[in-house]
Image (cartoon, rainbow, N blue to C red):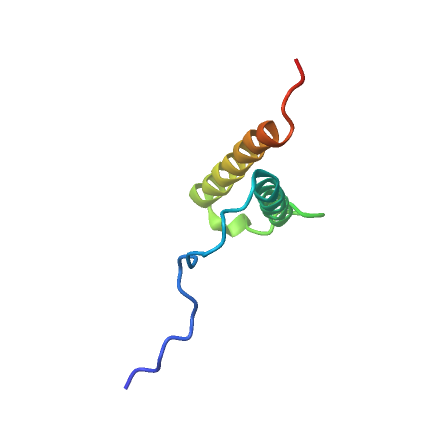
Length: 82
């Protein structure tokens, strides 16, 4: 008999609350980007050298997507003065 799976679902559960505002998303995305880059380089040699070029490319792609999202959220949170 198989044991029950106690892992959480792979997708986030829907929230009954209103979606987070741009400032909250900006904080979350910038924290994610910072953590990702710390993992990639940290204070010493990269931690995932054995991952191979394809995975490293995917990590940098993820970092660039997070950076783009952060830049877009900055534009929403801090509108330019004209």
